[in-house]
Amino acid sequence: MAKESLARDAAVRAWRRSRRAGRDLVDGLFPHHCALCDRLSRRPLALCGECEGLLTFNFNGCERCALPDTPPGGPPCPACRGGLAFDRVLAPLSYDATLAALVGRWKYRRDLALNALFADLWLRHAPAPDRPDRVLPVPLHWRRLWWRGFNQGERLATAIVRIHPALDGVPIDRRLLRRHRPTGNQAALGQRERRANVSGAFTPRGPCDNLHLAVVDDVCTTGATADAAARALKAAGARRVDLWCIARAPATTQR
Image (cartoon, rainbow, N blue to C red; front, top):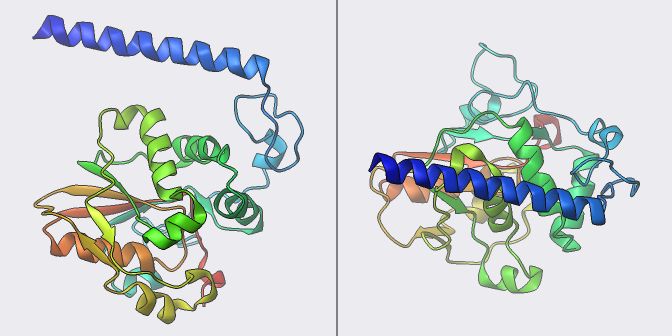
């Protein structure tokens, strides 16, 4: 068993080296351009250093729900006082106008090259995740999936698990959680309306007995969607539900 384990580890290391070499070759032949200013980024990332400096990083977020600008050690933040069902949010960025432009291109203009950029930003700037039993993209209703052409949560989950060394071998479960009814566009709704809009919208397709699950979405605004998903999963027996996303919206932008 020890020899098999050593051989497997050596094979994984060799695969990663070859993957890095292949990526370096592609980067040399097809240099990355910055997704914001369109200049050569001069690094293996579709974002130049100057434009990355324009992003707002969520270094002072709530330790539980990642709400930006939450003083550490103080009373529960407004979001946590509302009784959210998920246990921890990992959101390395604060949702601002610069990031909104990138997310809009990704979701509504189908700029799928941004999958790798968002996964890389998450890998480099998110707190270390506790290894879950499964990773679950937040599902879209089939009508929304047909209209958009892809599930951004699934693309992000796949990219994160592929490149994060601590998540090697964690399965991505695309079937366990189902959105069984369509919901209106959350962007145009206030906080209460968002909760009502997604309440009861998710159904697990099987038991979640004692599982630690990580749900992946693009942006956490009020937390209503992740809260509805977490409630459904915990009702099916999940022990812990975390949310992984690119960014968390500040309280000042929530209505």
